[in-house]
Length: 297
Image (cartoon, rainbow, N blue to C red; front, side):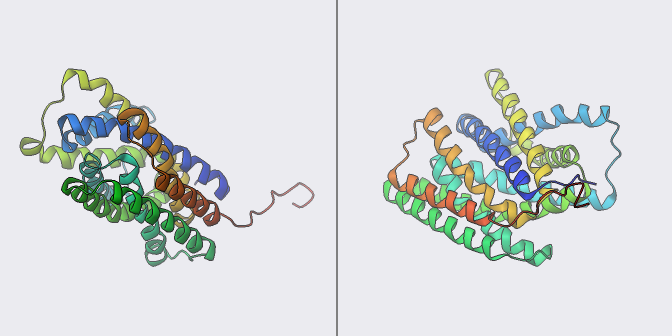
């Protein structure tokens, strides 16, 4: 069983996982530009399996139970569709814009959690999601006015579709984290995704160039670390509490987009980011029980 942890601690760990994932996004975007999103995602997933499988075997972890394996298969498939759509779209839009559009996912996940997990939707979560969504609208207006090419529109539509699948993967992650430890969740998600992508490799894939291997390895390390952090957090807090943490990805994506791809951050973007951060703080605002003392016990 998971050790007790406050929602604030889980939120902090999840936020760290999102920051690491944003760094990985910048690497995968570069690889996708060079050799296509399919190749970039496939080889990153295979490298992730190569990193985590030895650790899983050394720890002598048992094979997942049938119920857990079904969850791993389901999330691997849903997450795979989301990742492919996201990186295909990210090649065609700035990182900040692409990530901003994925903020639809936490909002969808908040309400999916009520329908599928029986979680009660708190007013703070609803209010925070609404404020953060307003920030997304501000960013979208600024980015659309700056760039409205056909490729940008197609990229945006792909990212919006990815956000729908990502919302489903967040719910499945919550269920995964309740029946498996973070290493198992991260490993089997990558394992399923790798297997599915390898099936299409003869038609859509190809071998990476030697010069791309360091980037693929770095992306695998960052992706695995992020997955472990998120699985740990989702095992210790409700999905609707952690869903708004996805909004912090915008700040990191804007930073990496500027550093790696020289993508400019507009005043619209800054204003939207402020609203998004405010929404995150509002969503997690709730009373935390004071730790028990020996006298209270």
